Amino acid sequence: MQVGARSEKGRTRAQNQDRYALIELDSKGLYLLACADGIGGQIAGDIASSLAVSRLGEHVQDASSSGELFKSLSRVMVEGFSEANRAVFEQARIVDGRMGMGTTLTAAVVWGSRVCLGHVGDTRAYLLHDSRLERVTNDHSLVGELFRKGDITEDEAMSHPQRNVITRALGAFEQVTVDISERDFECGFAVVLLSDGVTGYVRSEEIMHIIGSTNPAQHCADVIVQRALDRGTPDDATCVVLLARKMAEGGAAS
Image (cartoon, rainbow, N blue to C red):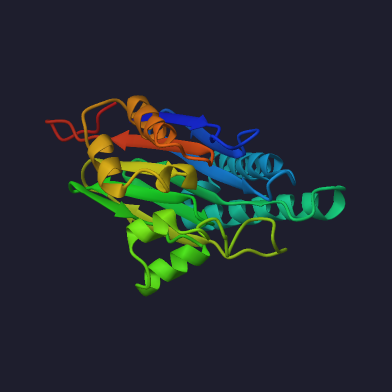
């Protein structure tokens, strides 16, 4: 396994409100990846994203230590998202000046050849396998809904004036619905998490070319984020990458 991540402040942002986690839970191919994008502008978006990532990370680590994680990756992921949502919701409710804060959150638990993904918001997850890049998540946003209906193209979605209008986020309500998907792979694969500061400026074809190269995971993350920055992204830009490449002998590259 190879892992890498990079996060940078957007051109028009006073602070970076993206947060990510990249945690090796054991030495046998068990990882947690997460990416969150705080919303609410100056209303503590950075606190919301930090809180969500840390609570999810704590829950998954506890479940790994107790063995609960291996009984059901999906159940542990849903529980972790629920805890993260509750933490953000309570902060917004009880702390002065934080009403209206929230965050997106997309995460992956990778256990050998199995990947479990959880998703709320418009931070995206992609899987590269069989020489094909698959976008696993649907954007919970106004523009995402228009794109799924076929009302706009990918190019139009990337430049749409309402592309930042989110329809589902952590902290908005006491309960949250989490999109879950779980996959098993027989050969090499890659997991990529991207905040909208990247996906609004780097096309999927470019992501596939970069991730599908022979470069290390950290180099891939650096190139993807730098490309968004070079194109003037006003939003914070974050990329988290895990590569499980198949070696000639049939094993995963380390």
